[in-house]
Image 1 (cartoon, protein in one colour):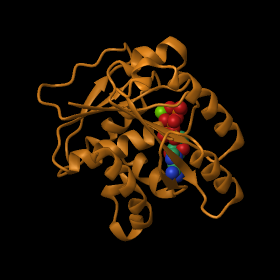
Image 2: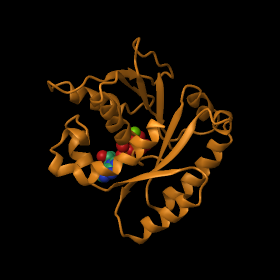
Image 3: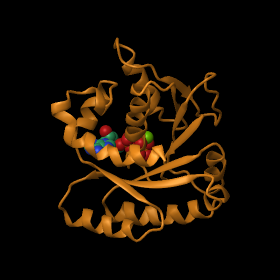
Image 4: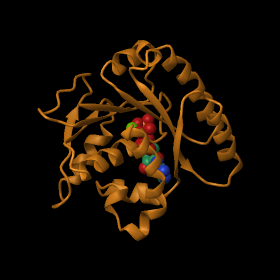
Amino acid sequence: MRTIMLMNAKGGCGKTTIATNLATWYADEGKRVALADFDPQKSTLDWLEARQGYEGIPDIQAIDATNGLIRPAKETDVVIMDAPAGTHGKAINKMLLRVDTLILPVLPSPIDMRACNRFLTELLNNGRVSKHQTRIGIVANRVKEHTRIYHDLEAYLGHLKIPFITHFRESQNYIRSAEKGLALFELAPAQVYKDIILWDPLFDWLKV
Ligand SMILES: Nc1ncnc2c1ncn2[C@@H]1O[C@H](COP(=O)(O)OP(=O)(O)OP(=O)(O)O)[C@@H](O)[C@H]1O
Ligand SMILES: [Mg+2]
């Protein structure tokens, strides 16, 4: 069973948005997917509830993991885990015990970049990360391409030892899809193709 966690101690960087979209992508591929929500805000569970009104879209199992426990159904292929903001210290170690891949979203903003730096120091001290049992990749989110701050973020991420996988654009498509309980991949292709192509490097990285 594959276990992928979205984590960054900084709030609002896109953990839930990326978790729900990634879960849908795997489910569209025919995988049995569970979405485990560790956040007391329960945003992924809200999203799954909004999703229930549709027919003909793939099923995603909901796991309320706010008590720290996950019990996916038998034969689950992928568990996508949405971590809460403010995860630090021993809580990181506890959460990573069950994670083979960690995706860390970062926003192009000086506050977020500084917070990311501190969070990475904590992550790199984790035993599973230093032993390469948990693989980390960074994605930039809510990017306005051709802005100076995004170029600063690219330069910063380019110097890290951790791979910088891709960037996602600042786009209303994420907000529109989320409010309907859908993913980017479930909106009209003509509307979302510019956002979708930016996911390819992440899918390729996850396949390795
Ligand atoms: N690429 C994007 N373009 C536009 N809006 C986005 C994008 N990614 C996320 N958002 C919006 O930014 C807000 C924060 O995103 P999200 O809830 O996914 O972050 P989070 O890291 O899970 O936050 P929290 O730390 O509170 O759990 C949401 O309103 C979401 O719709
Ligand atoms: Mg969230």
